[in-house]
Image (cartoon, rainbow, N blue to C red; front, side, top):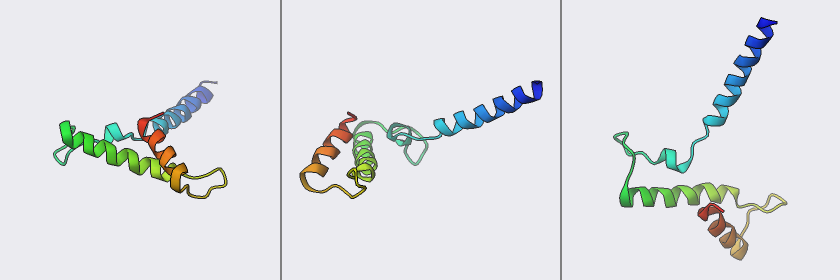
Length: 82
């Protein structure tokens, strides 16, 4: 019985660790010296990071890349975080 509980706890720990491993743009905003970015450097980094992450998600329901007004609308909404 205890062996099953220990096994379940170990599995839950690994599953939880994978969920926390996903990085956000905010957590990636670190300079070469390891310190958090601030001011214009952080703003620039965040804008580029959001654009990059949104560009990979800009696909239609058929799996084709969006283009034109549909892509512009999607990118604006995605970059705002909505």
